[in-house]
Amino acid sequence: MKSVLKYLSPYKKELIVAPTFKLIEAILELILPMIMAGLLDLADAGRATTGVILKRSLLMAIVALVGLGSALVCQYLASKSSQSYGTDLRNAIMKKALSLDASAYDKFGAAQIVNRLTSDTQKLQHAVAMFMRLVVRAPFLCIGASVMAAIVSPKTAIIIIVLIPIYILLLWLVLFKSVPVQLKVQEKLDRVARLLRENLSGVRVIRAFGRQKSRDDQFCQSCDEHREQMERVSFITASLNPATSLLMNAAIALIVWYGASQVSIGGMTKGDIVAFVSYVTQMMLQMVIVARLVIIYTGAYASAKRVSAVLETEPAIKDRDDAAALDVSGGDTAVEFDNVAFAYPGSPEPTVKNITFTLGRGETIGIIGATGSGKSTLAKLLSREYDVDSGRVKMFGCDVREIKLESLREHLAVVPQKAFLFSGTVASNMKKGAPDADNDEIIKALKAAQAYSFVEEAGGIEAPVARSGANFSGGQRQRLTVARGLIKKAPVLILDDSSSALDAATEAELRKSIKEYCADTAVMLISQRISAVRQADKIIVLRDGEMAGIGTHSRLAAECDEYRELCISQGEEVPEKEAV
Image (cartoon, rainbow, N blue to C red; front, side, top):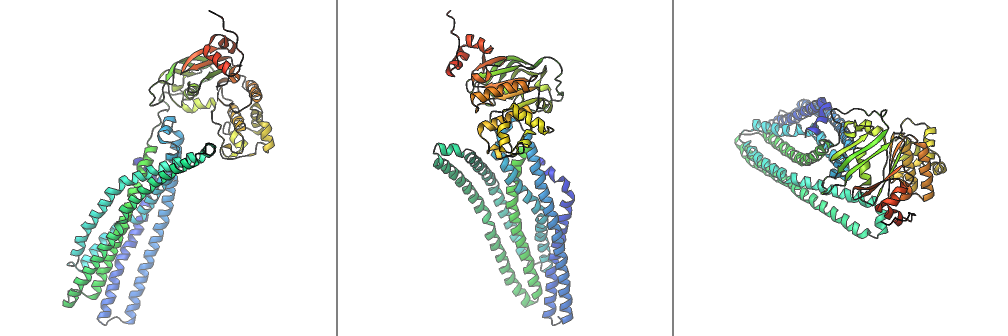
């Protein structure tokens, strides 16, 4: 909880001043019934002259106006502080989300993080506003009204003494029952958000396979489960209002019955009864507010636990105490894998093992293998999305675990399998790779990635890019992401199956221009296509996470059975294997 509450520290003054003004308003509300009771008693005694009525009325108006002013000050401070707190909390969640490693994302998922950033944060923001506006006022009025009622008639106050414990028991039962259900409500909402995101993102696949009804049924079932949990919460919390009304009306009936007998014997005046009823009504109405606050804070407590889970998650991949900036000036070896083994969390078997190779400056190494053979995993280990279980991964002679993450990734350019573009313009997307790049550098990178021709047709480098690059084809998006990687001019470039949507001619031109553009860059080229890697200085063949062979295309085609099978399956010519 500390991780959520610490963001309130900039608003300490407001957290004190706002409730103080609300307290002033509450005190003035307690004074009003006494003024009114005094006026009624004067009228009953025949001493309520016009002057007395005007003076008492003016006093009541002044008290009401001062109370109104105090309430407005509190409302302003509460609104400003709660909105600012919500903004700070959202910024903190986003900052934390961007710092989390791949394993943390596997744990939470995008839909959960979005829900915690929006729905849960909104509940916490509302809880802060209610704290400043009502948490002090409502209990104070409950206690104050009880005390004032006891001053008016100590004997009649016994009714209040009996009612309060009953109401406290009712509140405790609601709190005890509703907190677990509130947590389930948020869990069901996470599932609804996840399915919604999947359905909208994969709408083309759903239509292509004619699965609209099944996906709709699955979403409806999830919504029904969320509705059922909400109904449970609503049933529990809705019982408070009728129970409170029942207690309040029973109290008023008892007061009127008992007060009538006291008036007849001179134990109470009519003004005392009016004041006592006003105080009891005030007290019970504030109890209704307290009940609502209990509901709000049970939900806020559940949300605070969920938000805290994100904020308190520490990434497994982080800088060591002795981490240093990467020095790329020494040595000719850019990348080295030394007997590397790694298994994803929860996997019983290693994804890759016994991986050993080196990549020099200006060299290109191709990595090829069947689906699931561990090709992309090698790229993730180099960029430290995950850490190796055994062995070492080095860049320019330094273990990547001993390099500051910022420095490591500054010297890496990664073009991932999924071509993702940000909404904006072509230029703004290119500047994600090199923020200081000028127009000439952007155009040069686009030309190297075989992307400039269609960008020019679209309107130049200021051409708009829709969300996820939806206004470009798959091959165009791939070339734009390649250009974004090239413009970074990092000493190590990872191309993770980044030309899978290109035709053979365009792919050949792309390889040629990348070689010219990145003459001194070490390139790790991951692909499933022989045509993409055959010109590499050396090629690694992966089979079930292990190296089945390493060498040039001609050598592997002659000596490596796994590579020969890939060549044959893709229509590549291979030399006849010599008979043993």
